[in-house]
Length: 348
Image (tube, rainbow, N blue to C red):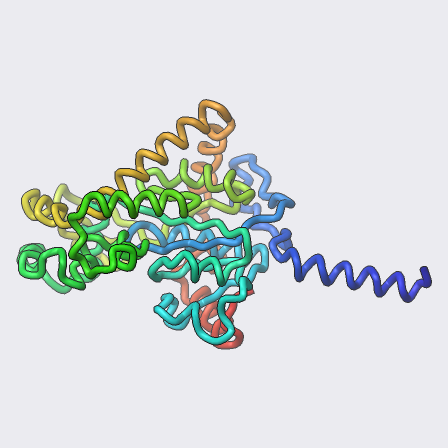
C-alpha cells in the first residue's frame, strides 16, 4: 500500500472509531480528590450504553443527574438539553429529533418509552430514582412554600385525587413515570389497585434500574456494574443538603428557611391519596433490597466497593475549590450548559 493511501486508510479508521463508537473513553475524572481512598480513577475502556434518566422531583434526582452530566463531560458525550432544562411534550418530537443521536437524556420530564428510545443511541439504559413518598411530599411542600400544611390538606380535600393537579404533590413520581398517560386519566384511576399493579409490571419490564434515595450508595454500586462505568465516575455529590435542628423544624443549608413538617394526622391524610406513589416505591424498594443481597452474596466485592464509594463521597464533600462540574447548582456550570445549548442544542 502506498504511503499516502496508508495515511488515508488510518484517517478513515479514526473517523469511524469516533463517529460509530462515541462512547469510548476520551477523558478521565480527576484523581486528586480520591487519592486518600487508594482507588484508581482510571475509566474503564469499555463501551457504555446511552443513558435515559427519568428525573423525578424532590428525590435527590439532581444528585444523580449530576453524575450523568459529569460522565457526559468526562467522556465528551452528546446530550440533549431542552429549553428551560425540562422536556416538554414536543421537546423530543420536533424537527430533527428521533434519530437515535444522543448519548444521554437527564432532565425533568414525563417518561415516554417510545420517544426516549427514539432519541438515544441503542442500547440505552433507562433508569430513575424514587424516594419514600412521605419524605418526598414533605420536601415538595417546603420547596413550593406557597401554603401551610393545614391549607395543603384542605386543598387536597377539596380537589380529591381525581383532579388534574393533585398528583403534583401526592403522586408526583407516578406522574413523571407516565402513570397518567398509562391510565388515560388525570387521577380517576389513582385508587384502582389492579391498574396500578399493571403499571408497575410495565415499569418493571421497561426500566433497567430504579435507584432508591434512602439506599443511594448501594444502588450506585449496582449502577456501576450495570453500565460499565468506573466506580469513580458514579461518586455522588449532594445537590442540596438539609440539617435537622429540632424534631419538627429543619433548616436548609442553602436558604436557612425553616423546614416545617406536617402533623401525624395531616401526613396520614395526604399519604392516603398517594397510593400510586406508595405502591410503586414499595415494589422497587423490595426489588432493590433483593438485588443488593443477591449481588453481595455472589459477588462480595460489592461490599468493598460500597466502602470505597463512601470514602470517595466523603473526600469530594470535604474537598475545597471543586471544579464547577461537581456542582450542578454553580453559576459556572449552568452558564456552560446554557451556552452550549444556545449554540447547538447539545452538550458534547
